[in-house]
Length: 226
Ligand SMILES: [Zn+2]
Image (cartoon, rainbow, N blue to C red; front, side, top):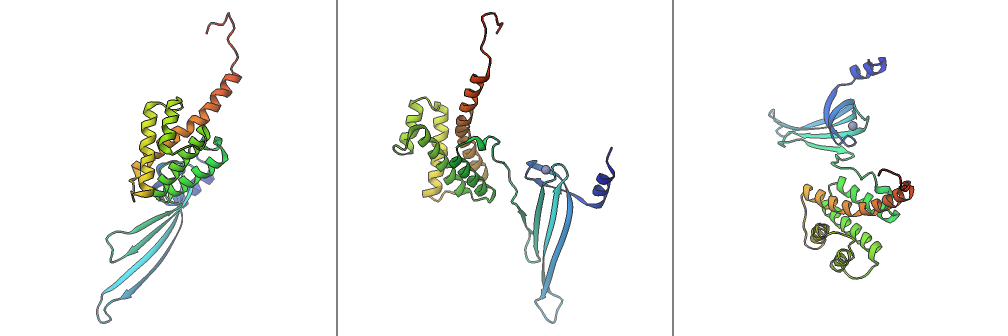
């Protein structure tokens, strides 16, 4: 049963559907506040013709997780579509929950990569993702040689599998193309690169987790069934 306060909130605020950055999907949002600034200008002092525009700010709160977003809608009578922006920008993915178990320098860089991702700066995302792979390889092998040589070495030392090597080469080439060949990837391609790079970085976290499990798990006794 809903509390009196919940009923008051539900009745007081209008509800609309909007994307939630925490729930990572479209959810019901309360319209907490709304402000509209509008103006117009006559383009024919002797006729009825005028152009008009308005900016509407809407503060939204997710009914599920209570995350708050500001939506700005700009209307201009001469345009076909309104310009809509969100602050903070709408995001499709969040930092992986294990990111703070990475070394400090990697954490700082992966946060910057996500900042670029949420600002839709796709080329910067790929450049940053490439730099993350470089940090990982230098940690594993030392700063010796170029990317290609280090990937070969990772594979020859069984630090990555053959399929992982191919994925990593594709991700690094996308980063190289963004840096040197003016390549501007599409959103799903950026997400593919991040998937590959995070898969690599998570190896680092899982290695520590495996060592911890080995240390904490009681040893099997002779009589133990399994
Ligand atoms: Zn939410």
